[in-house]
Structure formats: structure tokens, C-alpha cells
Amino acid sequence: METYKLDEIVVDILNARLADEYNAERFYIAASIWCDLNGFERASKHFVDEYHDERRHAHKLQKHASDWNIALTLPTVSEPQPEFESLTAIIEMAYKMEYALCEAYQNDIKAIDTEYPATEVFLSKFIKIQDEAVTSYSDMLKKLDGITTKFELLMLEKKIF
Ligand SMILES: [Fe+2]
Image (cartoon, rainbow, N blue to C red; front, side, top):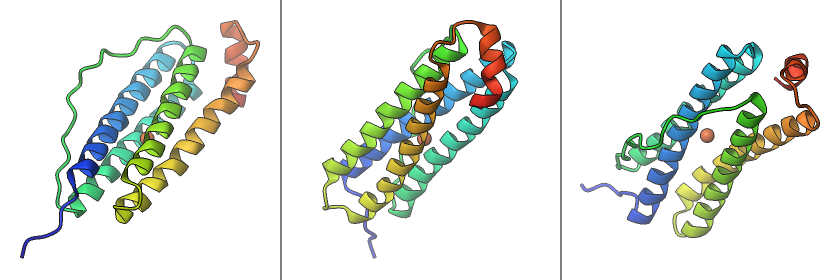
């Protein structure tokens, strides 16, 4: 008997988010290494946890698709390795990236409307994940307001991470 497969519109959405999750993983790998090289050990550990989380998110998307008899496309790496100027810049970039991904998942849910309830319920879990990511980086940015020197950042690192 032939099994049901996800429709193309859903597959396209899942492939796009899969690429985003793997890009997020790469971003946090680069961030953790930068922090390690620049003396921010706690921040480095935080970003290690982040890249493990991003890999798990990617795997969840792949599992949802394979449960519905579709193999998603493993994304090729086309973007250059991110470069960073400071820990503050990394946190700002992470905040923007997580916010953009939150919007993307919200738009995906709108796009599939109620036509694909299994995927709609599945994707709504990612809204919660993104909500937590966006608000945690937002909180970090508030603590960093007015901090300009590396010394101050090192002193504050324990309070942020
Ligand atoms: Fe993620």
C-alpha cells in the first residue's frame, strides 16, 4: 500500500527551516570558538550548548519529515564563516538570527494554515523554542547596555552566562 507523504508546500518549508537550523549550528560553533580564543570561557560553554541544541532542532525537522515518508535535503554550506568583533556583537547577531527564525516559523504556520494539522502542531513547538531564545538574548542585551570595554565584559560574564 502506498503511504501518505507530506505535500510539497510542507516539504519546502521544512527544507528551508532545516537550512536555517544548520546555519544556526554553524554560527554558534564559530561563536564558541571565538569566545574560547578571547578568554570568555563561560560564554564559549554557553555557545557549545547552543550548537548542540541547534543540531537537535535540525534532527527534529528531519524526523518529522521521515515519519511522513519524506527525506529532507541536507543543506550545502554556501555562507562564509561568520566573523566577530566582540562578544557584544555575537550576542546582537544571535538575537537577530533567533528573532528572524521566530518570524520564519510564525510565517510557516500561517502559510500552511489548518490544512496540515500534524505539521502545524509540530511547528508550533518551534515557536516556543524561538520565544525562549529571543527573550534570553534580549535579556542579555539589556545587561550589556552601557558596557564598552573587554574588562567590563569579563567582569559581567558570570551574570550573563
Ligand atoms: Fe534552533
